[in-house]
Length: 191
Image (tube, rainbow, N blue to C red):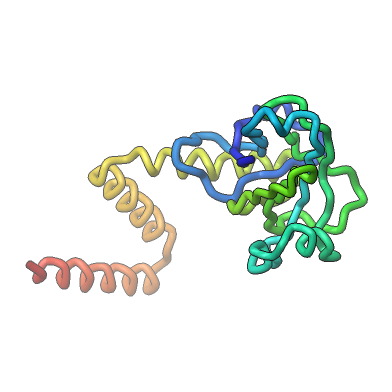
């Protein structure tokens, strides 16, 4: 059994949602989790999905029965395996013990076979549409930055530096310009 990430459109959001913290290679969008099942023999078995706080990460190498017995591990979803891909919409019904913004991992156990798998990429809980849209904007900026050539990125950073300097007043701007000149001169002497 393995766990993969699949994109979920914003209009599919209802209630609470798991939000990936970092983009994965090849995944241009913010995504919710899905579980891929490998092997026909697993059909009809029970799959349990747990939400694990990031602080428990060092214990993820423990046997599944020890891990799920911890007090801060929450059963998020339980189902019979009927297909090779199960979408976990990331719905969490309150009350739940985790505050928004905390980082989590997903731990899945196919109990009939004692097979366990963990999603090591951290997620965080987002409760409001505003949080989700801010996270979405952050993800889009990351994607755009990754697509830039070195020259484009250099120009982008120069633009940010210029706008930062223009916001400074008087003596503070002069100090920052002097520091920048020192940096430019030191770089010019290299090579």
